Amino acid sequence: MTVIVKQFNPDYFGAPDWYGATGEDFIAAQEALGRILSGKRIAPELYGTVCDVEKRRYWLFTEDLGENLQPRRKYFADEEMKHCLGLVEKLGKIHLLFADKEKELRALGGGWCDMYKSVWRDTCESAIERAPNNIETIVQTGKFPWLDEMATDFDAIMEPCRPIIDSLVSWPFCFTHGDRNAEDNMVIGREGEEPIYYFIDWDDLTFIPVLDELAGFLNYQGTLCHTDDLADFGYGREETEELALVERYWECIQGSPLVPKDLEECLIMYKYYKLIHTIRCICLHSERLIQSRFEEVRREGEIRRALPVAIKLAKEAQHGFVG
Image (spheres, one colour):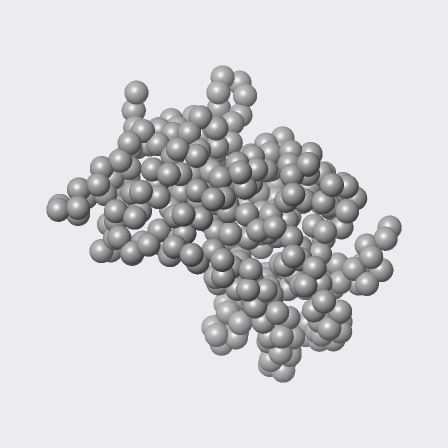
């Protein structure tokens, strides 16, 4: 049997917020996660740890998933649908498992998770406040003529979006993988002829509404919650496929308090989360474009893709997503 040895150096990296301040906290948290995830076919098995405080050595010994993995990819937009379904099923399994273990996970969190609802709300409200001003600043440069008409439509949807946040923040929050980057931490392995899906590198957790995470998972790389960490917009599928993936997710966790009992209600709620998530995306990328003095071309592309999505969803939301 081969293993992967991972060394954690708190002097160099610093421990993530939810672990506490020391290498000992990090090891204790990894051991707790190992107990929760062990045997669930979600993450590599954790075989053991070394915590040598005197020598400041903090090591993890985990399962080697082997070489028979799909190569890293940057975008999942063209991923085979069977793999997208498999990854969504695994995400649902994580949410159910972590919801059941919330008390144990909260014990690792140092109390910060209790602030996440207010932080999440503040992030959403701030994006609604700042995004139109950012877009107007970009329009005023005259460098992006495609944006002129779209900016007016975008500004008009902001006020109706504000009340949506009150409804969304009332749904349960759940612990989940804090760095679901398709390029690095989501892998497809094989058992015989069958694919199997893993979320690796559990260095961080986050605490967010599950449908907000699903919206980010199906439409964006990386995570976007209380931080500014967001990679490329571009995981999106055709709408029929996207909704099929949401339905599969709902089938995996239906009956839990994390999602509405009715599928149609769940699909509508998902679209509300996607709308707010997309506005946050636009806010982030527009700020980064301004900070780069309008030279970071990739940011323009992300805004150009996300704006029509937000406008369409907001207009549909005004009619209750009927039809």
